[in-house]
Image 1: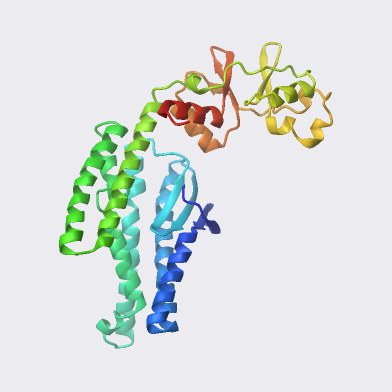
Image 2: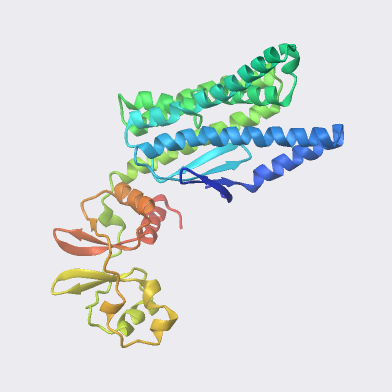
Length: 357
């Protein structure tokens, strides 16, 4: 995930800037100022900033539609190659992905149209030459927005057009097959764009963009394959089993000893055959509580814990952990405690599944 520092928050969505974007603007400012003077450098920097404001608006449009479907948006990060919205989860239905993706390009077309209409109206009001008014930074911003809108409409991953195409295919098949077919179509288009870039445009930058998009499409397929695999795996496969169990009247010392001896999951607390709490590692090992080892567990345990249904798939549970920021949670199957699931146990299982250690 691309990191950055937050500059503002709009509609509850943090907007962040990656250092790569700052370096890019600084580089073009320096090159332009060295070539044509300070004013030209400042103009170039202002155009870049304005373009990335437009990209942020583009991503906000996606994000607002996403939030309307109950999917949380963690933030928008602007970086070297554009903007990225971090979502808690993927859309569940094809119509959701279609509506989320399709709003992007019209935003850039609208910005382009507003700027051009504004320039036409301004030249008409001042009785100036409209063609002369086109030779300025505003026109450049309008044309870049037009380019962004057209480029994003290409039916190839990870552009909006690719996601629209996947959503349409998804309606008649499953998510994984739709992703694979969309990626196949994407790669045919990318090969054609690569040929165009080399032999017609004679631009190696175009070739680099094609390579980046090719890799991004592969990442989309791998993510879809992982999601499909997790949807076939019960959550019980990835939970900790054999976790020590405490009574609410056990001294805190006992839980501290378990944690100190290598127990990696938070500890279930059971009374009269009923799960009543979870003793959290970070709570039990607080410095002040280590000085109170005889304190009963019930005074420290978490009573607001969330239980996980043992019949659920790992995909559903992993998504819920990510969305709700869950802590270690007890897994219940046939009304009995069978284990504890946590981000660590999920990651350990996935590493074992993929052969990564």
